[in-house]
Image 1 (cartoon, rainbow, N blue to C red):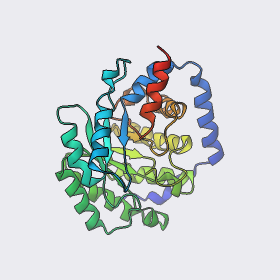
Image 2 (cartoon, rainbow, N blue to C red):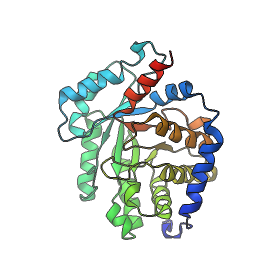
Image 3 (tube, rainbow, N blue to C red):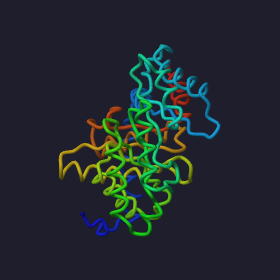
Image 4 (cartoon, helix red, strand yellow):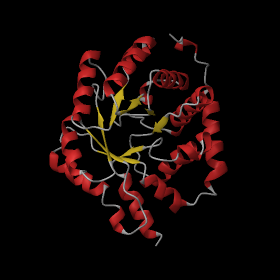
Length: 284
C-alpha cells in the first residue's frame, strides 16, 4: 500500500499566487461565448434537497434536454444529478436523450455510515439505472490519518459501481490545508476514481479556485506517471458565469484541451444554466 502520509507540503501563498497568475495571463484573451457554450455542455444539472419530488426531477430533466431547442447555439447539459430514490424517475424522463443520470450515493453528504451500507446504497443506485455515482470520502477518518481505510472504502465503492463511472467528492472545505487536499486527491485517484470532485455543496467553502488547482495538479502528475486520464468536477455554489470560466480556464491551462469535454470535465450546478442562457441571449 502506498504511504500517503508523505505528500509534499503545499504552500497556501504559492498556490494562491499560481491561481492568480494563470487567470491573469489568459482571461483577457477568452472568447466568452465559445467558452460558455462549452460550459453548458459539461454541466451536471443538480437537485439535492430533502424536498425533492418526482415532478421537480422531471421538470429539471426537461430543462436539461431542452436547451438545444432555444436556438441559441447552446448544447444540452451533460447529465442530471439526483438522490438514489429519484434515479428511476430521471431515467424515465431522459429516455431517448443523450443526457446521463448521475446520483449521489454512499451516505451523502456526511459519509458517516459503515462501508457495507455505503456499498449497498451504491449497488441499489446503479441497479436503478444510474450511469454515474458521486460518493463522498470519510473526512473524519481522513483527518484522523486513516488514509488506507479511506483508500479501501473508495476501492470498494468503485467495485460496487460496476460499469458506472465513479466521482469521488473530497469536500475540500473540510480538509483544512492545501497539502491535505492534495493528499485526498492522490488517495482517490489511486483507489480508482474516474473523476475527483471538490464539494457536496452542503458546506462552505465549497468549490474554490485554489482547491481546483491543487486537484488539477494531482491529475496532471498522475497522468504524467501512468498515462491514465482522470476527470475533474468542481461543484457547490457555482451560479456565476465568471466563476465557471475560471474553472474552465484552470483546467485548460493545467491539463490541456483533451480534458475539455463531458467525459473528463463537469461542473455541478443548479443555477448556472440560467446564467449562461441569459448572457448568451444578450450577445445576439
